[in-house]
Image: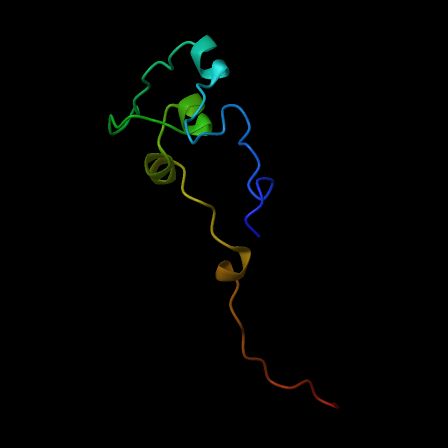
Length: 82
């Protein structure tokens, strides 16, 4: 099994070195946007768009209660004749 073709020559650039990302060089650096409520830096696209982090957004805009939590069971007497 010790033939010269057992381990072919590696491809160019496959020596383990990471090639630089050309798209990352062309894009301008992202502007630091901070949360309007707590001041922490925002990283997510939705958070950057709204200006609020996920925890601060949940504080200002809580989820509506589930419809099942507003209903309650009522005990009724059986109908006569049934």
